[in-house]
Image (cartoon, rainbow, N blue to C red; front, side):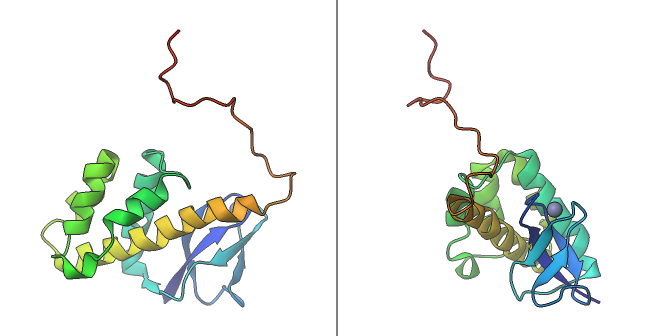
Length: 155
Ligand SMILES: [Zn+2]
């Protein structure tokens, strides 16, 4: 069974879906929204736990549409580096991602797969940002108070 990465347009959740239920790149999400296929890249059932681990490591590290592009830089030229080197760069930038480096450690194939999953998911997260710029004004986007420094205001 082949699985394709999809992201819901409503709840933004990213997960794998069986290619059999994805019709013209779309599949209904549990939330009632429609999820779209992220890439033509297909995974197998064996990859699902790794995929979910990557997604949850990003979520628990608080990686957002804003920080995803910075992490994507760590994956630049990953194929010219030894397997896992890009994972190490990622955990340097975001210590919460070290869990994936540990899972993939010592297995070149898993390391490469994890790198490609990070790329797919981070690109999807980064794209959420530009897409939300085109979203209708109804989209729940609480405007934060303008502040130049985050958390640096202690007066
Ligand atoms: Zn959804």
